[in-house]
Length: 288
Ligand SMILES: [Cu+2]
Image 1 (cartoon, protein in one colour):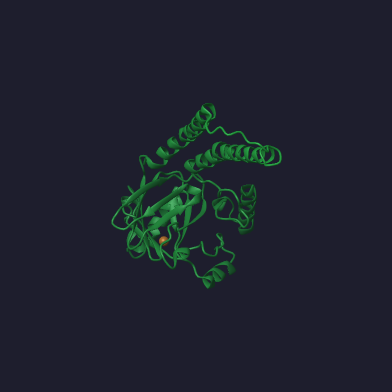
Image 2 (image 1 turned 60 degrees about the vertical axis):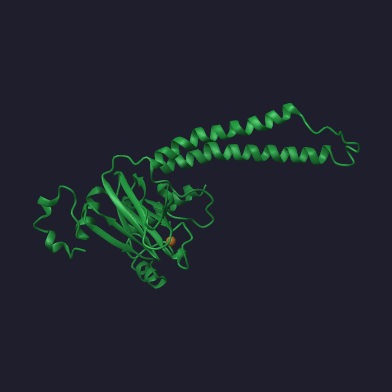
């Protein structure tokens, strides 16, 4: 129910900041929110519908049934209502039912969740490869094929106040905004390699349906395809040390043209763009 409010808030923010559609979507926690953040990938939409249409009805049904059984036992079989209890200990029919029914419930859940897990874990043909490295306590991002690498640390409260004083297009958020956001193109499959430099972290962006452990000496992989431009936040999701709560993830999903501009501004090169940008490339900025 908070999702509607979030959309309205995001639309309002877009109206206030004037530039309209570019930042129409925002994946961020809302005060008092109880549901998922706004999904921005097909995978996350499927996670939300699996949760809403299958898991929750089953969980509620099981809970209500168990509660009803409890109440029935409490009322019908207490010492006053049932002073002389029967002494039998087995009932084949009941035992078969309470074995078979949970098995059926688990098979129903598995029939919905396994295809979703396979979809999450099968990396599709990807246009871009993004390498994410967890550090104590910031994230390093690299597009190895584009020659772009950045590091992204938490934005201090003073920096947030300073940035927001100028009514920016994307207002900074406490504990979520970063010194340098990761930029990704909308509508492209991005293959994500996740690793760590020191201790175990986890790179998680709720709106993308992505949460991948960052483990030193090991490369985990995941993927996403963001379907609307926007700002999406996440946080390190593996308890990693004293500043675990202070290594946020800020992702700006932008159009392909804007992504190409960003890559050029970072001193990188888009595939096939070498000839067109050759004259300007040296002036674009220092390479890293
Ligand atoms: Cu961490």
